[in-house]
Image (tube, rainbow, N blue to C red; front, side, top):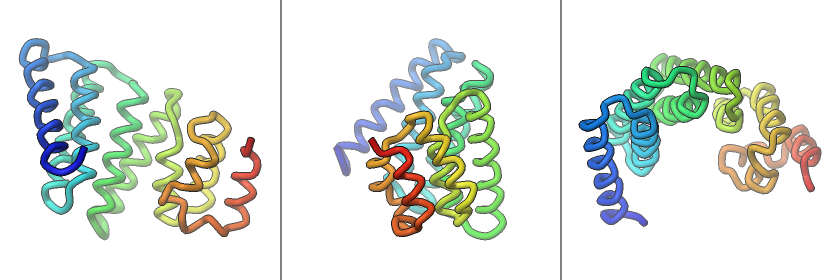
Length: 173
């Protein structure tokens, strides 16, 4: 769904999340899912509207971790959210958001979570060596397929890079 129909669906979901939290304020799954849906919704927006949604998403992820500590999926999505928010900023503010995203991703990985979005964010930042290191880990754990990586816009600048090509060849079926 797109446009008004998608916006209606998101807003309907947010209303339902709110009702659940009114009944059970410490419902982990609701907080986590609410944060995730806010993240997805923010990706459909631009400017101040997107920033507000990203920041609301971050609050939900914080709340989810207050309910259940050390959940890698929350930290992973929180890192993704911070990285997306950083893309809307520049200078020191963007750098601080990226640093915070890396911390969240590393904590998620430490707890058994995925490394793919961290590899993508590092690739976009031009941190090739680290990006390839985390992409290698991601492919080794079958988090993503080689075909998916090739089609992912985050890697478009690396498609002719011989190290990138060699890395993907390692994991082709």
